[in-house]
Length: 144
Image 1 (tube, rainbow, N blue to C red):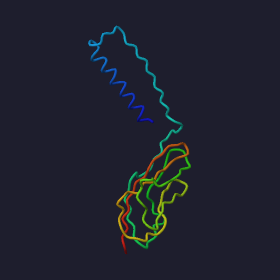
Image 2: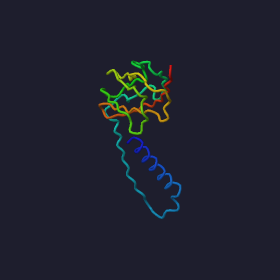
Image 3: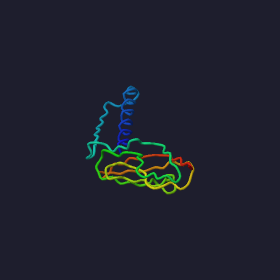
């Protein structure tokens, strides 16, 4: 929504600049323009953040990834909810994302298959206030 308002403001400024540059060409005695903008900052005072926003994880087949930290979610309004994006690539076989209730996103499980992800894994994070963020990661899983 914020980008839409910025776009509308830029369009209005371009229009006013055009009128000013070409005012001699217009045959009018007066132009009246009334513009009002409402900016709604929302209820959040601090934005929802994911650190880092992108990462590459290296795993080993047969070695538990339990507790491996991949990202920290902060700001916004807790609690947070997590879901794989519909366009996400798959997590490595045997591995899942976990969250400890404090915004720490970790891996759980044990990788069962070697290989590298060709499509990034995208994790969408939403907070209780309606804000959203995403985390993007790639995986390389090797055999022992």
